[in-house]
Length: 318
Image 1 (tube, helix red, strand yellow):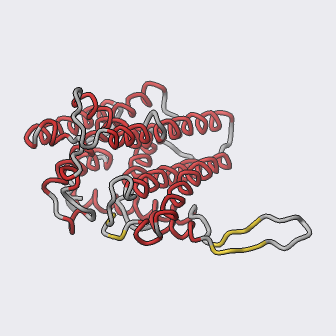
Image 2 (cartoon, helix red, strand yellow; image 1 turned 30 degrees about the vertical axis):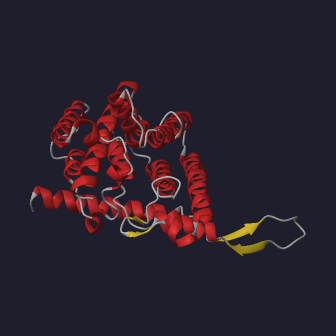
Image 3 (cartoon, helix red, strand yellow; image 1 turned 45 degrees about the vertical axis):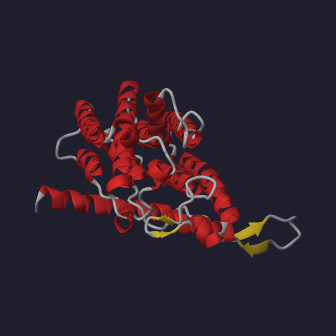
C-alpha cells in the first residue's frame, strides 16, 4: 500500500468517526416544553433543529475536528470521551459561521458543499436561528466533557479548552475577522496588507488555532506546546484562506461546491487582489512548509497524518 493510500484510509476512518460523534450530539428535531409537574409535557416539531441538522450533516471534510483529533493524538491524549464533545463543538461553530456567511446580508450564496444553502431551503429567519442554535449548541456540547472529567486536572483542561474555543470564535477571533471582511468590501483601504492579515488571521485561522490548541490542552500538553500549536494553526489557517482565494479565481463551481468568482465581483480584499496570483502561490507554499517544520519541532513525523493533511490542504481543489 502506498503512503497516499494509507493516509487516505486513515483520514477516511477518522472522518467517519467524527461523523458518528456529530450524530451523537445532534439536536432532537422534536422539542419539549417544560411544564409544571402536574401537567403533561408539550411536544412540537422544531423546524430550527431540522435546519441546524441539515447544514451540519450536509457533507464537508471535517478538517477542524480532524486537526483537533490529530493534535490530541500527537500529544498522547487518552481521554477520548472528554475530547469528543469538543470535536462536535468546533464543527458546530464552523457550520454556524457558514450559514450566516451565506446569508443575503453577507455573501449571498445559494450553494454550499454542493447543496442549497440553509436560507434557500428554510428561509432567512430560520437560517439565522439555525446559526444561533448551532453556536449555543456548541457550548452546551463542549460542557458535556465535564461528565468525563476524572480529577481536578481534567477540569482545569476543560476550562482552558473552553476559554480557547470561545475566544477564537468571538470578536477577538472569527467574528472579528468576518466583521472586518464585510467592512472592507468595495472600499479603498490604505493599509491593505495589515487589513488582509487581520482578516486571514481571525476569520479563517482562528478556528484552526482553536482546533490544534484544544486538542493539545485536552491531551495534557504544556504551555509551550500549546503556544506552538497556536502558531501552527495560524500558518495553516492563513494558507487555507490563500488557497481559497486562489480557487475563487481558478476553480469551477461544480468542483468547488460553491459559486466561484464572487471575491472579484464583490471587491473583496484577498491575497490575490493584494499581491497577485504568483505571490499568492509562493506564500501558500511558504506557510505550508513553515507549518510542517513547526509540527516536526513538536514531535510530528513526516509520515504522520497531521503532516499529510497540512500538505493536502495546500493542494486541494475545493
